Length: 377
Ligand SMILES: Cc1ncc(COP(=O)(O)O)c(C=O)c1O
Image (tube, rainbow, N blue to C red; front, side):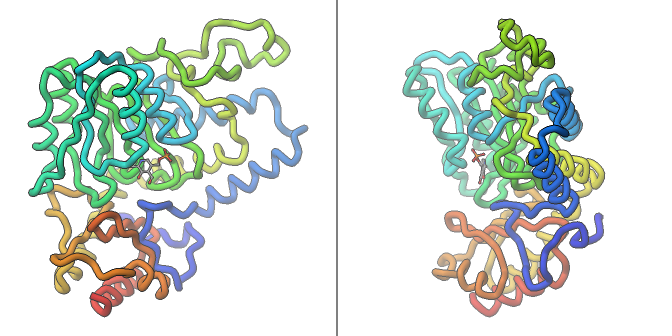
């Protein structure tokens, strides 16, 4: 268990913030790194051509460590939707084949597939929400020889319901189908090993559980796609781009591995140092320990909430960092605003009250949340 890390963040004691699923706060170290980055851009004479590469490579390597991949498999993207568009562009699909996704999945991992289906004559298959919340069994039961792509999360963004991606990945592979993951609501807080799950593409935005900046994300691309088509044609990811004097000697080749999928201007001097500082801290804490600690926090909150009728998913079906609470008869209108008036931050997603804490939350935060809920329910 990791002790409370609030001292590493700048969060007033008056704020009880349980909303990492919306946006995490920055670590003080990450904020300072970002300020330094802005200062560098104010003095461009301090920015050397080599700097367009070094920080990106550091970030790529750190992210690769987080998911047990190689730096060559990582592309730098601005958003989850950008990465998912790369996946949609590079997986061949035929008319009548199926693209599988979950009911009420986050739209970034929906729109690119509905467009692909329109363009190719493929079919979207939405797995309905299972009454017992066991998404793994529901997805496994839906996979057949017509499925070409499953576009999935590690846990549902509304209530944290977990998917066993190793089992799902194995069944998809046995049918020759591809696995595309949007892990924006889990990576950084829930351990993930690409060597075990073997996704074809995996993407995350940085601004939630990665504790990083907005407008930056990372993407894993399996080696068989390293010769694929990028979304845009920028100069920095071309072979030999380190030599700025020779940039007009245009070349067809790219930098090695997944670097060809990097977004234009990926050497972002303000945001990249923020992502690096956050990745270093996540790796230092260890994602397995983050998950264990957050599981304990959410379990304690869930036990107290059960007393006034707010029910979580069963422990074995939910991700430990993510608590979706539902009540028979629904939640009172304006519950979010009522809590907000007391400086308590949660989200409502569908029928679920979403509590998404991090290591900065202390006992006092949990006491305030549960006391307020008991008063207002
Ligand atoms: C599951 C999931 N994916 C992706 C995103 C963000 O998508 P994008 O980076 O395309 O804005 C969110 C934001 O709430 C999300 O919950």
